[in-house]
Each structure stands twice: as C-alpha cells, then as structure tokens.
Length: 288
Image (cartoon, rainbow, N blue to C red):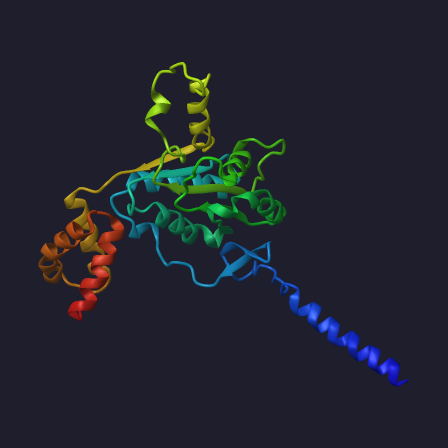
C-alpha cells in the first residue's frame, strides 16, 4: 500500500511538471462583445486576441482626404451589403490618415456587423488559417495589415499574394484585406530594375519578368487609394479642428498657429498625425 501511494505521488508530481511546460489554454474570441482582434502567437500557436478598447476616431475627424474617405467608405458599404467589393491598398505620405481611415470605417460599420483583425507582417504566413477560422462566422471581417512592405524573399509576401488572388479556393465572401504602405509596390525598387539588360556572367536573362514580379502583389489589390502631403493651409485647418475638439476657442486657435508651424518644421512633416500631436501638446502645456 505504501508503495502504491508513493507511486501515485510521484505520478502526480510528474504530471504537474508536464503541465507547467505546456502552453496555457487559448481563450476563444469574444465574438459577442468585441469588434476588433489582433492575431498573436503563443508557443508557436496562433490565436485571436480580443481588443477591448478601439481607437475612438470617426470619419468626420479626418480632414483634407475627402476623396479617399469616399472611396473607402463606398467600398466598405458595398462589402457590408453583400455586393462585390475590392481588397484595398492605401499608399502614400506618412501621417495622412491611412490607418486612421480604416479604424474610422470600423467604428462606422461595427453596428452593422463589421469586425477587424489586425495582422503583423511577420504573421501573414497564417492568413489561410485566419480566413478558415472566420469563414463560417456571420460577421464581415476586414483583415488589416498596417505599414506593409517587404524585403526580398520574405515568406509573408507569397502568403499575401496567394490570399489575394492566387489560391485554388475562392476568397471567403465575408473577408476583405485592407493594407497600408508607404511603398506603392510593397517591394524595394532598384535602379537596375528599369535599366536595359546587359550581358554578364550572372545577369538576369529576363529582367522584365523581375520587374513584373515586384509589382504583381500590389496589382492584386482591386482598389488603390493614394494619399499626398498636406499644404500649409491644409495642415493649419486640421490643427484648428483638433484644438477646437479639445476645447479651444477661436482666439486661442488663432494664437496657436505660429507654434503649430514651428512644430511642423521641427518634425519635418505637415500631416494629420503631426497636427493632432501638436494640438495635444499645446492644450496640455497651456492648461487650456
């Protein structure tokens, strides 16, 4: 009897040690109470992490990008209505509202069943798994890839290319991919790509095909939306909006303009992001 108790005690200790080495159980996504998720990895296993607080930005908060707003909102509206819609690539100047526009669309259509899943570039190899996970859900999903660009040979490049338009299976009707990038073609472009072919020992026999490969990914996005740097008056108009949003009156906004211009000069950029950052710094510093 003593030997049996000793054996059982040893077995329990061993089981406790094994359990400590196993990854913790992954919680199921909170589909009912969340509208945004992030794809994460734990011990090599992917899962949807629930985002409890989503950035509270609306389409009305975004200024000087009216054309871009109309394009994205219309495409998303078609998607929500079950009509044909396109995957979207948003490219151009930094800080001009590319990512904010996608978050604002989520807030606009979340009540209608839109959900957003953010996926890092390194995890794009799991796209097929993510799509399979949500394919039978009644909600509509935007898979969001922010600040996307690739270097030669990265695995995520091929995975995204297949997910957009290269698999034998059709893309799920409840999934679209929205991506932002500062590069229109997502891969680095070299001067040699556009130069004529010169015979050499290790030269590319088909340089045209190399160029085609570099632009083939961006061409699989059905809708391209371009963003451009703001002019000074555009930047000041956005500054005025955010200052008013934070409680400043017209006189205070007018007094802040010289500081806003100096702020943009120091940052080397006139953008919506810089305008918002200035407004927060100015209101906080002056106790307004």
